[in-house]
Amino acid sequence: MEINLSEIRKKTVPAEQYVSALDQPFRDYFLATKQTYRLQPEATNQLRGLADKYVVVAFSAGWCKDCAKYIPVLALISEATGLEVRVFGGIKKDPLSHTCKWRIPPSPPEVRTFGIDKLPIIIVFDTDGREIGRIIETPRQWPTLEQELYAIIGSQ
Image 1 (cartoon, one colour):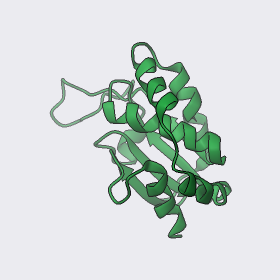
Image 2 (cartoon, one colour):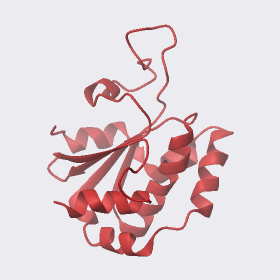
Image 3 (cartoon, helix red, strand yellow):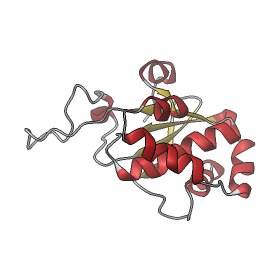
């Protein structure tokens, strides 16, 4: 899938801004992760050298425990490497629909465009807007998010 990154930037916020703007008590959960997590140095250094060639787009919700675990790490990765990380937030379930998982609005319509069915979804794009990989909920092949991101980016 190829996307228009300029449009995505208009509809999202940087990861750090997303974490800082969350309502309580969710902000405290996200900030606790951000304050205690230590990035894996080797993967962080490798990402730093490739950061200007990729953009990460994540889908998140304050109520999501996996989001509270990984979105703050994305903010740290962005700060440490310069990797651009954008977040679609405010994802809400639609308890009144059996055919539609997310309530739109307030969830952004991009949840349909990108086929989002779990959270968080972390999508890596090259600077031309081509999707090169996804992390669904948690890293699958590597122990840390930064290692998993480098595995995706480094394979290009």
